[in-house]
Length: 213
Ligand SMILES: N[C@@H](CCC(=O)N[C@@H](CS)C(=O)NCC(=O)O)C(=O)O
Image (cartoon, rainbow, N blue to C red; front, side, top):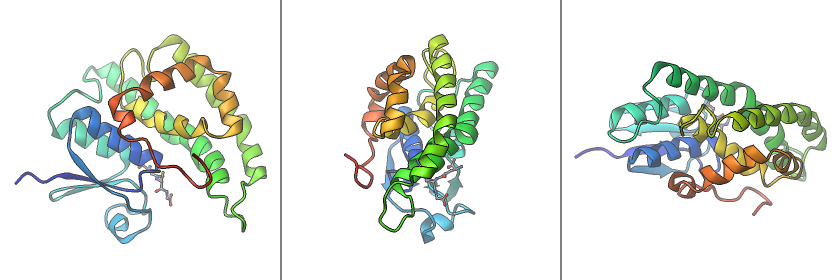
């Protein structure tokens, strides 16, 4: 029997959504195990307890980009990464920019300060939100420039780079300062609306986070 691929991680996670989108885009059937970070199932695969992790028969993997690479290369279906060297490297470049420069500001600084502030009453941490705003404006300027020149994040075709960015913008629409920034970035907003129509985006819309619809 062919084993089913398992994506392990809570569906609210932007990275879990990216891995799930990759499966849908590739046409790979998968099972979602909605597990939180730092649980036994996750710690067994990710050395730092982060989600998502993946299991496929005897193969286990962590780190979203590695999971996407496996899904892309182990199964038949449309290429998630371009096979042309320059286009592939351009895609890697934008995945890396999302992971190292964009996610830390959008998610780990700004969104976390809203959703997981750690304050006793669960209130948003205004100081951390304010501190994130200049970096967020700079990122929106970069995105707006990119989407003014190209229809997709890594150039003129849809790639996994778009799948890394979309889940972040999904949450930013719901929060006041970032929603205003998105409104002032019409090319980025148009990209978001267009990519959100894809079946892979529609099939992976996350459940709402605390206090949000
Ligand atoms: N570099 C990892 C990042 C994954 C990540 O940060 N996941 C978050 C949820 S969105 C997490 O598990 N956070 C718990 C923690 O950092 O301790 C990847 O690409 O998969």
